[in-house]
Image (cartoon, rainbow, N blue to C red; front, side, top):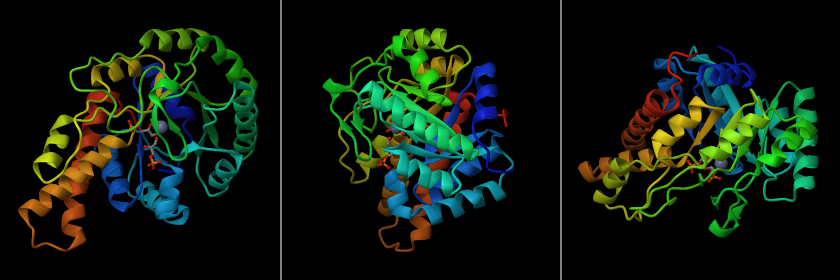
Length: 311
Ligand code: G3H
Ligand code: 13P
Ligand code: ZN
């Protein structure tokens, strides 16, 4: 199947009450793990690259890896830019064959966010690509943006209609209490997403696809493997999966997951080295990391997103 935009994918997800996983990719093994899991489960999937991924792997390699994923699977795949900081990076990705880009000016004043998002939407639409923008700010670390917890701001539902109308973007990321990274909440706390804000936003934008960033659940079984095999991760918990499931049943059509895949890769590699301290063939230890990444993607598709058999 060819590389597609998310237009049809999101329409089906909205109507069907499920969400599509957007998984961050940085190397071949991660692309393979996601593509294999999605293909086995007949699930549509979004592969996304951050500016950091483009710097690490280079856009040329990433595009070839995604091309290989498309050639070896039979499910719709979107290639998306995650957290594009300005028009230039978005243009570069559209020109390079990405079918979707995110322009993230969420930390800028409203008018600046509108102007840059509209500029990107106009360019992308002229070139057959679609655009995600963001209103409200998440805490945590993104490539060039580090938002402190006290600066994180929920999305104001009163702004969403005007923003979407004026920019022409195709989907909107909102802040309802998710955050980036593996250290989201202290253990023992009871994280609660503001699903009431999501509902308000959905009322103002009927049928419009909403995106959730920072949606890793920080699965404790992988944290445990890492820490039992020489790691020193701090105690933390992530976004409760039942709340993500509920969001997916509503207007949320795209759920972003990166940190959980990193935990899976690290757990597999650490476990491998403890069992085989004499190994030095990267295929052996990265291969074990890849197995856990695939296991995690399968779990997300079946138990959180509900996108299996929707390709
Ligand atoms: O939202 C951020 C993503 O997890 C990408 O992380 O900028 O370290 O590649 P990165
Ligand atoms: P996590 O850090 O929760 O995996 O979020 C990833 C993300 O939002 C990528 O844009
Ligand atoms: Zn994000």
